[in-house]
Length: 183
Image 1: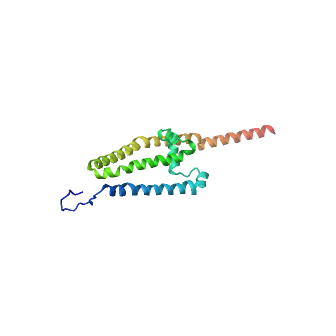
Image 2: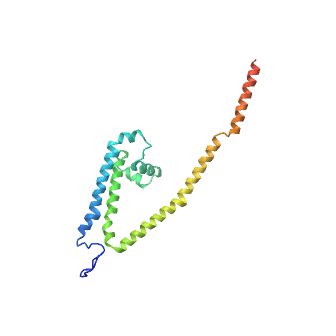
Image 3: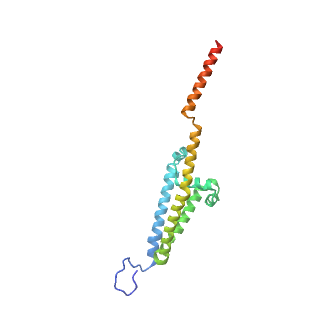
């Protein structure tokens, strides 16, 4: 933005009214989101519904998030059940819309304020570092430990080749002695 009365051209176009900013930084992205949400719902929950009901292995964003929320029994799982279990999808859509509107509404103030923009950038970088570090130091080691435990339990349940041959020879010996005694 260039100060009024200066002949220099700003690197970003000067906007006389904030309605222009609200239109292009809030309403247009919100309309695009609304269109995407309607198309997603039509494709996933109307057109492809039978396929997804037949195959529980196919993951949609709703299935994945609700599975994790149910397992954790967190606040989002409880909030999504306010209208009952049969309306969880509707609550998921409403919660997602509220989140999108709230975060999109911050774009204009962040765009207009250098200080808010710097704070937002610091928040984004800090959140990325925190989440990445948490994954590397907390989640990955647990996954490795679980994988090793599964490997050990699998090894202990499957008999070794030597044990199998000993069991087979013992079975053959018993069968031979039974045959000799019966004659």
